[in-house]
Length: 423
Image (tube, rainbow, N blue to C red):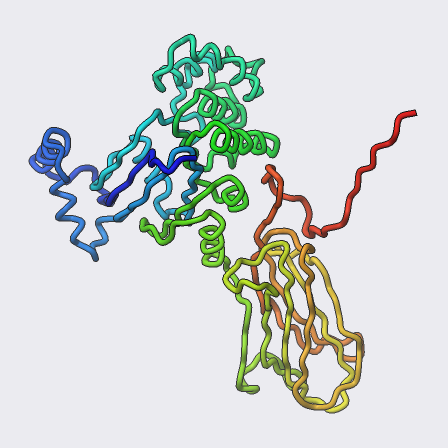
């Protein structure tokens, strides 16, 4: 990777008018065409429309984006759905034009924005390989030299002379990615297309992109919701929010910022007035909270994180025989575990409880916790339902496969392999 920028973006913006094609006036449409296509000036209509900040008729898909991408860099663009990621990639791929701003770049670009981008349904796989190579400015001999490698990577040898309209979505995307990655573009743009592939295909694609960036010096622009893949593959990342750039920097830092912002969780509840707190004549809650045990308080909860549940409640009955159970559920209400305190006799007053969920136990996913209070080891007296909810993010080290890990739990049990000496 060099420090020379291969792509420069300055003051890039894209404005859409909702519900209407064009300006609604033939005269204004002709004027816009003349200004933007002949005079190469800024669109006068959108300059006026963009000043209507509170108008519901216009939408800024992108607003004042500025960044550089260096040669040989793997660069990620992340953000929630609707943040403007795909719009930005389409502008860089010259599929759509920006409303304002400047883009400077050099080198051949190949874009994989959706399944089979640039494919013609009526042509065979073989014909589409040559067609895409021609679009990149490659000669027939250059394409022929890469042909066998493309077909082998895609795994569609048996159907290479079949029209691609008869391919399954998996076959389609395999061939599309193989073409995009092997025809030696200087810049490869990939937009979430790997989500449709199986685990084996994802591993091959991510490995190929990693080799293209780190070994062959090609530039990769990568959009994905798989944050582990972004962290492992990319050098830097940019976070988009509602069309605006909110952070740019090392991929791991940007991913942590993004995950900490999107984790939908309720890690604490507190009630100061016993009369207003959840409960009944026997039990009244005071507080419940889930504390991630980690040095960096801004880091997201992931599979390595130890979680400590702490709760307080008012016992309102003297000499009660009481036990408390912790129920952990998946978001789909499947119980992961039910653990309980030992039954004991308690006086009236405030009681504290705690439970620790060790790191490297839960799989990634969404969870919630409920607490049950039981009298005489058998009689339920109160159930605090879904008092805590949280997200656990994935984490993988030294691994190029990013498919979903099976199971609700993910313990770090040792598995060893021992070579058997030959006789």
